[in-house]
Length: 249
Image (cartoon, rainbow, N blue to C red; front, side, top):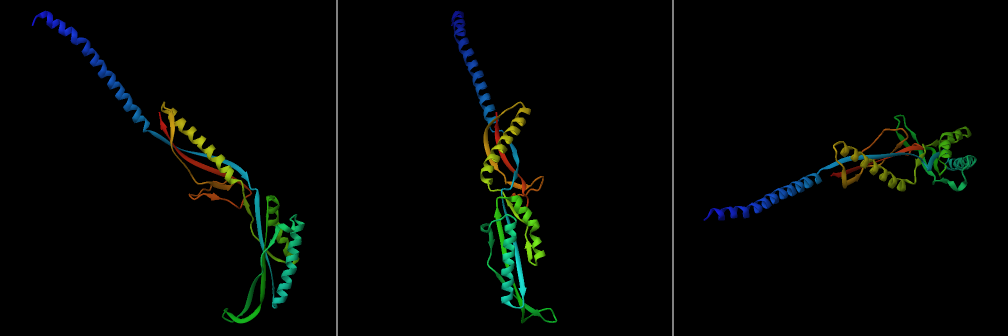
């Protein structure tokens, strides 16, 4: 083979070698970029977002009970009827209409004489009759006041027991949707701050889970794994927690 032919072959191979080399370099770059993208797409950041709001109860329930006692069942019943009327009148003077006052059926308890050892005998000593009364109202402040003042009936000779009222919030369903949205926004902001601190940004939501709802008395820090639902306070605070995971890009 002549020197001229060898030189011509070298000139023919040189462009092909350059093209192949560039192809390997570009391919390596694409593979590297793809691997980097796949690798980063599997990285997530998990955060907890929360939202709290002060609310006031809009519904209240008060319950009480009164009783009468006598050696005669008929006398005990007569006294209970009188007490029933006095209780009803008293509640009306406190601003509650008759249709709001609910009286239960009468409970009858037979009393027996105890022997010298303190055990009940078969000999009847009298009868004790009792009746429950309840009121439900949207005027929570009026119910709260009644629960503290109902024992005034004792001055009228009525043995009454006033129970602590229950204070409820009836719009919790609509409020829950709003609070979940606020908690999710808080979670997103937290994730963005974490990603930004490492010169990254967040991508799509990978998972989300709502935690239990805590409804506590105002300024209370009590929590429970099963959630809280305070019914003893008029003023409450509702707290919603959301756990969310975001991809990193």
